Image (tube, rainbow, N blue to C red; front, side, top):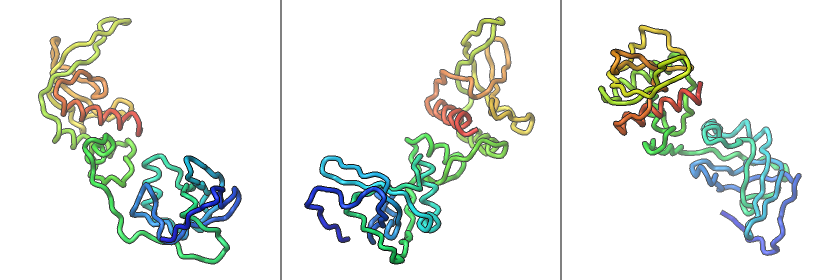
Length: 234
């Protein structure tokens, strides 16, 4: 890769310049994604500790040519896929000469990490790290229900808020013995799956989102992951 050092210390490019990525340059966040030939218009010059970076808005030719997995990764990580930022040494002026846009030859999807909450939820749906988390729906609730049935260890101890008067709730202990059969009720997206168990007053039913103080660590993480998905992807 030809990277000529800028010895002048002043930016080579200005806002408004049309630039393109040199052949052989890869995305610093996604090394398996080549950027050669990507082009656009400089919108910002950033100088920091001797490094000069250019932010440029990708043109339509580039946006229609980039690999779909790049868009998905940007959406997954909260990045703007229409904007790119690179060091000026990775860029050249775009003189209008048609240059092929490089395409990935091998997508390298990282394995799921069970230390990452989103990846643990992906595991529930049989997805990869490059997949977006699915939206909450009746179908996806059923998938999660089947997953939790196989992963949760019953019975387990937890706590739940119980209304003891019109203006007062009390945190009570209960034993979670299972999940309410998915096919026997209409799952409400705001409340999600229903658990069943026992407390001092007898049998109880409750939203999985409403229990806390789960003593078993593995069960606690499974319930917290489900509650996070339900609250954020509904």
